[in-house]
Amino acid sequence: MLTSIHLADWKSFGSGEGARNLLPFAPLTLLVGPNASGKSNVLEALRFLQGAALDLPLADVLRGRWEGQREVWPGIRGHVVEAARSGTRGFELATRWRLPSSEVTHSIRVSTDGDVSIERESLYEDGDYLFDTHAPALRGQPGRVDGGGLRVAFRAAGKGNSPTTTCSALKSVLVQLEPKERVAPSVLERSTDVRSGLKDAVFLDIRPSLMRDYRPTKAGQLGTSGENVSPVLFALKEQEPGRFEDVVDWLSELSAPALETIEFDKTRLDEVMLFFVEKGGRQVSARSASDGTLRFLGELVALLTCREGSLIVLEEPDVGLHPSRIHLLAELLEDVASRRRLQILATTHSPTLLAHLSQEALGAAIAFGRDADSGWTICSRVSDLPHFSHLRDAPNLEHLVSTGWLERAL
Ligand SMILES: Nc1ncnc2c1ncn2[C@@H]1O[C@H](COP(=O)(O)OP(=O)(O)O)[C@@H](O)[C@H]1O
Ligand SMILES: [Mg+2]
Image 1 (cartoon, helix red, strand yellow):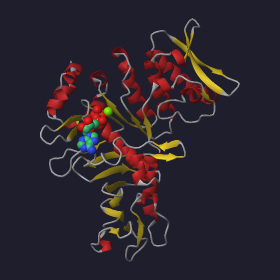
Image 2 (cartoon, helix red, strand yellow; image 1 turned 135 degrees about the vertical axis):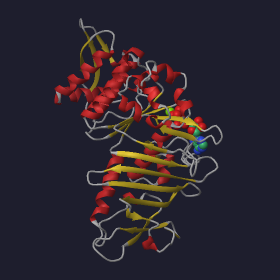
Image 3 (cartoon, helix red, strand yellow; image 1 turned 45 degrees about the vertical axis):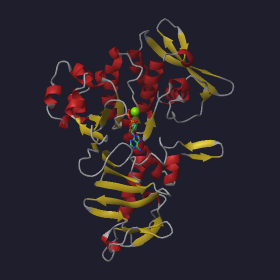
Image 4 (spheres, helix red, strand yellow; image 1 turned 120 degrees about the vertical axis):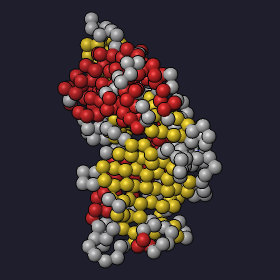
C-alpha cells in the first residue's frame, strides 16, 4: 500500500518550510477542494512515477511517447516546461510504501533544466539505504558524474564496503538494477515491489462518449477511458457469472428504470456491444445509454475486475451522478476497497459524497486549497483540521462543506 506522497516544487506545490505538501493515504482517500487547487496535480505526480517505473526515459514520461503513429504513453499535462513549479527548474517526489515485509521510502529529485535527468534518487528501509545516489559510501561526492551518469551505492550482501555502480541519469534507478554479487538481495526485492506497485496502478478517467462503440471481443483490459467496457463485461459474464451479477446488482440500484440484466450483441467481425435490459424487456444499447449510467458502469467494472490489492486512481467519479444516488458511489468505494483490498484515490467536488462516507473515510479525505500569499497548493488530512469533530458530528455536513468550511479550516 502507498502510505504517503511528498511533493516538492511539483506543479502548484511548494517546498521547504511553510510548504504543506505531504499527503497521507488510507485504503480510500478522497481529494477534495476547489477548482485548480492541485488535486489532479497529485494524480499526475503518481502517473509520472508510473511512467518512470515502466522503464521510460523521464523526458518521455513528461512529453509523451509515440511509436510510429501511435501514442503509447500520454505525457503529463504541461509537459517538461510546467512540470516543476514556475520559477523553479526541478522537483522532488517521495513516496512511502507499506510492503509485506517492511516500510520503504522512494525519493526522486529531477532536474528539468536541459535534459530531464535525475539529480538524486534513493530507496530507504527503516532509516538505512537500499540504494542512494548520495550515500556516505560515495564519500560526499554528488551522484551525478560527467556524461549523464549517476553513481549509486547499494546495501551490501554481508559485511564489507557498499558496492557502487554507475547508472544512466535519464531513467529511474528502479528500472536499472541488476543482480550483482555483492548487492543485498533485499535491494532488488524491495525495488521490484515498489516498481510493481507503481506499474500496476490503474488510472481511470471514464469517458462515456468512448464507451458507446462496438469493440473487439478480445480487447482484454477496460482501458483508461472505459472504452472496452462491452468486451470486458462480455468476458466477465462467461467466465465469472457471480461477479457479473454483482455489477448488474449495483447498477440496478442506480438507474431509474429497473434493470433486469445486461446482454450483448456480437457481430460477424467478432465485435461486441452491451445492451441494458430493463424490467419489462425493453433493451437500450450502450450507444444511447445515459452518460451517468455508463460512467458508473465503467467505475464498477474497473473496481470489481482489477487485480486484488491494486491502487486505483479515479478522476471525479461523482460526475454525472444524481445527488440521490451518490450514496451508492460512497458505498461502492468503501465496500470494494475493503472487500477486494484495493487502495483507492479519487478527486471529487461533491459535498454529498463526503456526507455519505463513514467517519473513518471522511477523516482520511484530504482537503485542498491554495495559500493566499505564496499561491502554493496547501493540503491537510480532514481529521487533522482544527475542529474536525465539529464537521464530523454536524447534522448538516453537506451544507458546511458546500459553503467552504474545509477551505476556511485549512
Ligand atoms: N508549473 C506550475 N507552476 C505553478 N502552478 C502550476 C503549475 N502547473 C500547474 N499549476 C497550477 O495548478 C493548477 C491546476 O491544478 P489541478 O491539480 O489541475 O486542479 P484541480 O484541483 O482542479 O484538479 C493550475 O491552474 C495552476 O494554477
Ligand atoms: Mg482536477
